[in-house]
Image 1 (cartoon, rainbow, N blue to C red):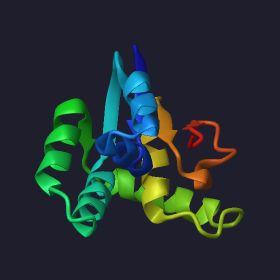
Image 2 (image 1 turned 90 degrees about the horizontal axis):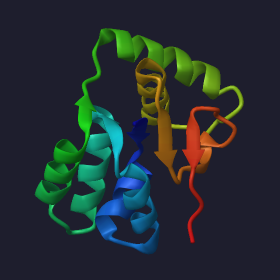
Image 3 (image 1 turned 90 degrees about the vertical axis):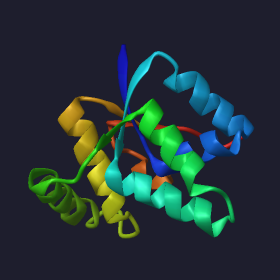
Image 4 (image 1 turned 180 degrees about the horizontal axis):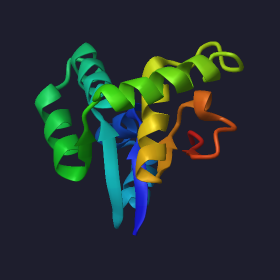
Length: 129
């Protein structure tokens, strides 16, 4: 069974039910899924901004994946990664560095549409159709 850390961009497509979301659905079937707690917050915020139910997002993500809380160790690793990544990727978000830290901690791949993950070996960068 593969291990995947699902990024906010992939979760949002999944929740939208788009053709890209169907691709995500196909890839997460039969995989062990992880989502950082900051990613959960990002998805909920975007759903609310779109005028959609945050309850659906919360329920979907917590039922389909293990939510990884940001403890001191993960925050430290994410902070180090963030500082290093910003040298070559000035627009990458702290939440992306946390996602990468989770992937490394869980020996998992990141499932994402976010091009900030381009050239990061742990990332499975999906292309929008």
